[in-house]
Amino acid sequence: MKIGNVEINGKAVLAPMAGVADRAFRELCVSYGASYVVSEMVSAKGIEMGDRKSKTLSFLSEKERPAAVQIFGSDPITMAECVHTVMEFSPEIIDINMGCPAPKIAGNGGGASLMRNPQLAESIIRAVVKESPVPVTVKIRSGWDETSVNAVEMAKRAENAGASAITVHGRTRKQMYAPPVNVNIIAEVKKNVSVPVIGNGDITDGQSAALMLENTNCDLIMIGRGALGAPWVFSHINAYLEHGRIIPEPPVSERMRVMIKHVETICEYKGESVGIREARKHGAWYTKGLRGAAKYRKELGMVSSLDELKKIAFRICVENQ
Image (tube, rainbow, N blue to C red):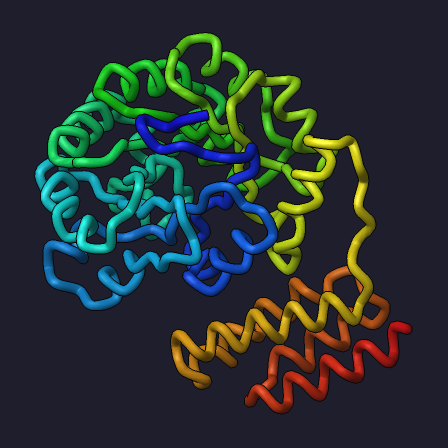
């Protein structure tokens, strides 16, 4: 299928997750079959002010294509103007975040708070589309809360403003990441727009991916938390959707090998000091469900070097044979 003029070969795409979906993780997920990835959120205001971190977050490598840079903000002019800076990194797509529930983002008028102001949201999309030389997509939630479930209206406005695809996370901002995702609202959005719709929420394996596609008729599925500590989830989903095969979870030795490779890549891109700090949270995800996981989380939460991480990983393998 295509998003605008960008061809997407596969159904499973990686969600934009702040503090997680960095270059190292995106490349890893692509190596396991993610068909399309989206960067961490980039502040349009940060770009305008020349913030170095915002530009760094916009960087895309050749190992992670096709890829989008996701921008957020609440001012149409600032959002439109940041497009020119973001395009220095040659994204195939620009995605607009209108679904982030974090208080720091939503509390400042960006992210999911735009679900409460559809007119402003439409103005932002229209402004970005006008400036962008590549397709523009939008990520929304089902609504702000249960009394204002307005994803269909938002999706129609987004399409009217020129968006080439719409991602719908089937929860309100108030619900954050629980209870179970509402697939009905994603299905309603799909029925009411002609551009591709990407379903997001609670996809953790091939079966849940297939159910999302079946229950919503969406065009693509977006995996976020289901990929944490499990980048191989994309190969599992692809095998199930394409051949009906259920691939067993990798053995502990393979999980630890992938974890070390992942952290080594973070260290290569960001330096060992930053990489090891980030390894602490990734280690908790890679060891989830293992025998002795609580003990490992505690140890990994205090790891201070790559060598120490490798020693812990080796011991985890021995203790979980």
